[in-house]
Length: 232
Image (tube, rainbow, N blue to C red; front, side, top):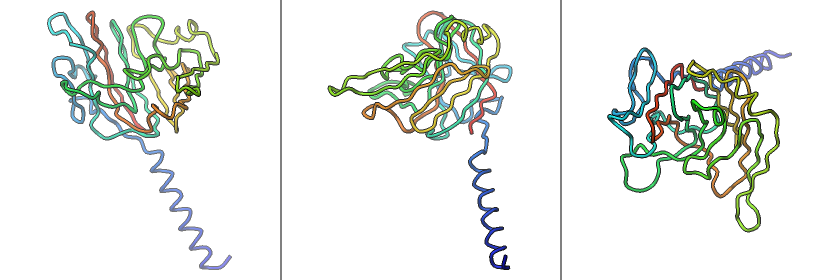
């Protein structure tokens, strides 16, 4: 090998290493002390004991679902992990989402949601908040397409039993939620177990990028917690 060839190979390896490190870089989205970098209604969002807390109370009920929005930019392909727990009600993690059109307080979000609830049915599913409804149930790999008339079609293939997968969720305790997005393939995991997988071939509606946000649900009082939010 010539001297010039050696230099070229070394430069190539250094460049490849730098790109790989960049692609695998992790970023913490929550400082554990404040809502710096996030925006939401202060009546419903706060930081307590090192966690983001979202709550809907009798004293201060929310009018419609409301969201805490990460202001760091739009997500495209990503791998997100966080810890969460919920005392009551329903919540979720919005991704590749968007602010609803129309006149409102600015904290109304639609798009893909990784659902998380205190009940037994919906934790882990992919829900379309103002965005086509339930997209993929727990224990299913779902492919979305449009038929010749432009109507949404769902083809679901079971890979697990929803009740058995639901036992993975620790009620009233901290759970680790992971969401991956690659192209138009989205996968949700709770505590290391795959909950659902969605392939969105609906070219008319699907989203290539969008906002990250957390949900406080309207209705009865509820309380949800998030911490250790890491984006890769």
